[in-house]
Image (cartoon, rainbow, N blue to C red; front, side, top):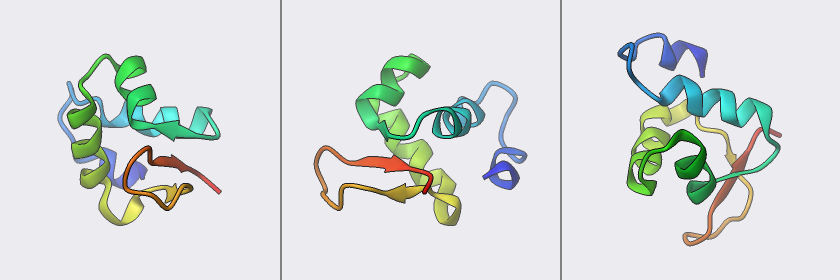
Length: 70
């Protein structure tokens, strides 16, 4: 994940999202939006930007998804 964040702009919230994944066992879109002070759609786009470095989805659902590092 750190390789993906190295290529981002200086004002990007993507490194903060990665730190959020490392600091909490479970991260949801609303939680990420609240803590990063962005919209839920922005969190979805940041997750898509991570691509192959995306943490594992723990819920297996399309709604109320949650990710974590296992």
